[in-house]
Length: 110
Length: 112
Image (cartoon, rainbow over all chains, first blue to last red):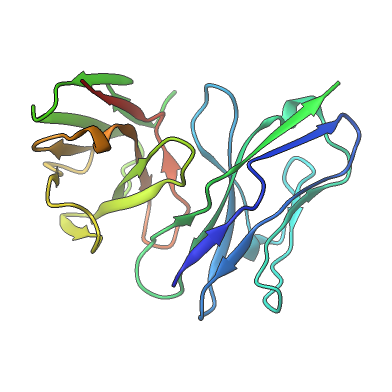
């Protein structure tokens, strides 16, 4: 079965602390992985995708096929990072279907 | 400069009364998607249009239909809403089947 698991509903950290939002997936092929973010009162928007291998707003994520994980990391959290974060998987081949995790709310405290 | 626009933001309907949610886009994207997101759950794809071709997910209830009269507009019709259909409905678009999806603000549907 194709599934994305985000084990933490809420992650609460202080400003300047490192952040790791966990994402594990279940898929037998070679998926494409994404992180989407939703700031308060804003729409869901793409943060980064694994094939780009880029850092966006200080966030990075590495696809670990052995552990079937795609954790999102940032070395020093900022208050403006507070948002809902969704990990998503797109199965290989076929159409652009996204399978989302249930999301993790990141709260960064001053 | 919203590019994927959903109307209305909040919709209240009665149990069993048909309701239509609207999505429009200014991106001229070929693909449009409808997702359902229930409280504290992951967004779940209901169906999508690739141009005029409609693609239904296998587990989407028959109660849910969609129309895409032109490139810019796509509608979600719920024929006989039940209490379990109360959710946030998200519209998204992508230029092609392989490009990232752009989301609207969503319509929150309540059923009385």
